[in-house]
Amino acid sequence: MLKKTITILLCILACMPAVLAQQITEVQAGITPDNPLYLLDTLGDEIKVMLQNNKEEKARLRLEIAEERLAEINEMSQKNKEKARLRAEEQHKKQVQQATIIAQELPETEQNKFQERFQKHIQHLETVMNKVPEQAKKGLQNAINNANQQFERVQSRISEQNKKTVEELRQANTKITSTKQKAKGGETT
Image 1 (cartoon, rainbow, N blue to C red):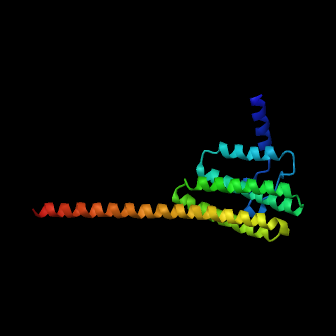
Image 2 (cartoon, one colour):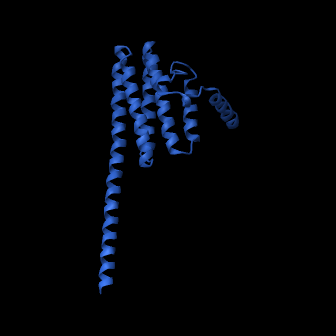
Image 3 (tube, helix red, strand yellow):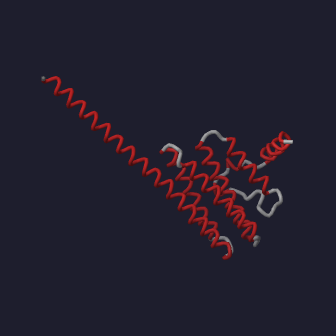
């Protein structure tokens, strides 16, 4: 039974459109929360993430999934499907939080790349908010606020790492200077 389930899920994954090659502005909603197959779509996304070994790729993939969820929010708003929109918002928030958690574990250079992608995501959130009906704006504003908080968390982490690196460099420089002074003192004696 487990093998059949895994096989079916892998087949579904193989049939899904390749979101990875698309630009953020081109992301389509795909299967939306009002579709009975939505659970399989979200499960397939989780499997894609789990199969990734590289943390940078996991963070990137989580952000791409968040973009898909944003497209779903937009579509459900346009169709006035409140419950489905709320479900997509919940999924979006989860993806943004998970992407941020992973990004905090990345090396500084990769965190900087993630921040650039994340800024584009926030801009896209703001663009979508301007297109949706009034009743959906509050939810999108919450999503923007959440994304900004997550962005600040990554920035804070980078700042902490930079301070730590500067302190380590100062300590190393002090040791080198001390060693040089001792060496010079030993030469003159």
